[in-house]
Length: 511
Image (cartoon, rainbow, N blue to C red; front, side, top):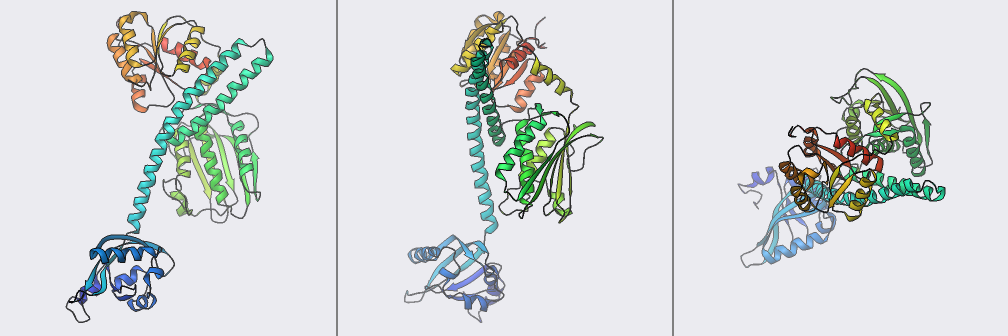
């Protein structure tokens, strides 16, 4: 490192990287302005004065200095030695150091000289990548678990429903069977939440009693929120039925409620209110392309908290944006995604010191609601025909066989895709419909159906799975050759979907 009058002194003084000389005992001998700035000091002199033992005064972990010293004494240098250090203002930063050991002509160790560069942003990026990888691993785990859970839950629910149908004459046993059905339905809802986390489940609307859902949410909030927070519920008179994905909508409302709680650290009132209104256009906060003017149900979450500035409101629903320490920035982004997927819109009213009001609007004049209501009360649909069933879960396969037989169908079943193709190839004219589990172990349901379709153009299929399969599935449905049923399902829903599949008019069929 150059001396005071060395021609390279100007480079030392004006270098962007921090440069230093430090004794083997850990006291800075010389530093340049960049190093002083790195540590938050106004001048080189102030840093030199305060840094007489850098292992304890600068390094978060004092052992890092010992490790750096040991490596330099052993190798003569270090490259990219990463440590977390203190700044003058009490903050912490990450630095990387490159340094070498300086010796005199007699090979005596004199001091260490080198450079230090801040890499805090780089470390934060690395941590985000690690966190993303961990979340991806968890999502894959959740996806696999939810698929297995759905298989087991589907079998329990199906057999319980069949018992319920058989035991109507025995009131006590019939009630026991119905309780099992209810418990399995709740377990299926938990699996939906697991799938929502795993991001393997699309939006699957069904007819919901909104007020019943909100009653459950309020009960949960009252148990978990601090006593200094009062929850006020004002619901529209009478029931409100809405087509919505229960898991997604519940998560959105909980996220908003939690957001309101955090805005009231000293207590306050959280109000949940429903209303019916007519909207001609969406609010600017959320403008889905398939928004339809008409009657909407409004769900308002109002708090008496700190409120928000206009600047904060403009960024509310952006992923990764958060004003909270330790926040992920995904809570309100999840709300936005849920409302958009339901073809709804959002309004926000807030000002500093005056609390906030989030209003979600979902369409309720949806023709699908009437169809769902009709199906929910429809009887078991029976029919005739021959069905090829491929399902690898033994319990589910036996259950589906018995369900189909009780509906009046003849069934030939197998445990994998290759066996299904072999059976179909022997007597392709025997089968009116193939019911295929998408997640077969040897060959997925898509490939199995493609092979079946090559044997018999115009073949029809009902694909079943515990998870959704995006565009690949949608293309097959759009082709008119297949229907889809998500596990777990009730026997009534199964019978309705089988009947719909029989009525398919595959354009590839030979006349």
